[in-house]
Structure formats: structure tokens, C-alpha cells
Image (cartoon, rainbow, N blue to C red; front, side):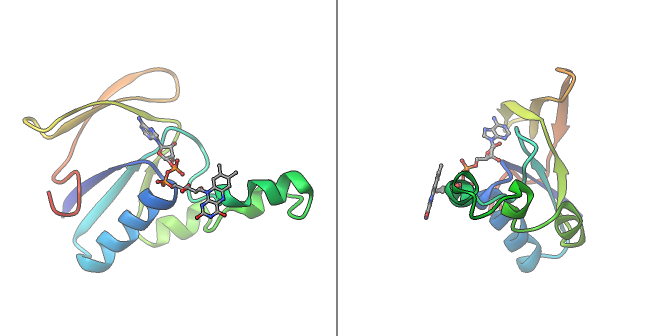
Length: 111
Ligand SMILES: Cc1cc2nc3c(=O)[nH]c(=O)nc-3n(C[C@H](O)[C@H](O)[C@H](O)COP(=O)(O)OP(=O)(O)OC[C@H]3O[C@@H](n4cnc5c(N)ncnc54)[C@H](O)[C@@H]3O)c2cc1C
């Protein structure tokens, strides 16, 4: 198994994770996401504001369970502060402001 760290969990991050699993099921994507709303339709925000989509939760393309079932591991409310390619680690700040170093096998699908 190879851990693939992906920074971000919106359209690009989720697409990268799903595609990586499709190409190589041995990859374990870990998505580090600064916010708590993975795979939400940002483009849908105007529809929520206008009232066409009353419940903001309906803006999610997939639930967290869907994402877990697809093999994506999520670290929400966690911000990547630095990337060290030499040691293959990223330094993150988690929810309580705690700093942590996470190792990776790959940082991009072709790394
Ligand atoms: C109101 C609105 C309406 C839109 N309507 C349309 C539309 O109709 N059609 C269209 O094609 N596009 C539309 N867009 C644009 C579309 O939403 C963006 O192109 C798309 O969201 C970009 O996706 P992304 O994954 O690249 O980046 P983003 O959606 O910006 O996501 C960035 C992700 O990275 C995370 N992140 C950032 N920094 C860090 C960090 N240091 N550590 C960890 N995580 C981090 C964030 O938390 C987030 O998960 C709209 C945008 C807005 C705001």
C-alpha cells in the first residue's frame, strides 16, 4: 500500500483521490482538508442563498460514508503548513491547533 497525500478535499482533491484509486487500488489516498465540508458543490452556494436548495447539506456531492466506501481517508479541519519532499512529509495543524507530521509515499499520483 502507498499513501498518497492530497491537499484539499473539494472538486480537485476528491477527483484526484477517486482517480488514484481507480488507476491503482493499492494506493491509499489521505486527503488533508482545511475545512469541514469535503466534496461540497461550491457552485451550488448561490442556489442555497436563493432558497432553491434550502438545506446546505444537500450541496454535498457525496457523504463522508460514500467517500470512505470509495477508499478515501479524510483529515478535516486540518491545514497543511509545509511540505518536505526530501523526507516525504507534510506538516499539518489539526483542529485543536496541534502540529503533526504526516509521512507519504506519494504527494501526487505520479510522484
Ligand atoms: C459562488 C461560486 C459559484 C461557482 N459556480 C461555478 C460554476 O457554475 N461552474 C464552474 O465551473 N465553476 C464554478 N465555480 C468555481 C468552482 O467552484 C471552482 O473552480 C472549484 O471549486 C475549484 O475546485 P478546487 O478543488 O480546485 O478548489 P477549491 O474548491 O477552492 O478547494 C480548495 C480545497 O483545498 C483546501 N485547502 C486549501 N488550502 C489548504 C491547506 N493549506 N491545507 C489543507 N487544505 C487546504 C480547502 O479546504 C478546499 O477543500 C464557482 C465558485 C463559486 C465561489
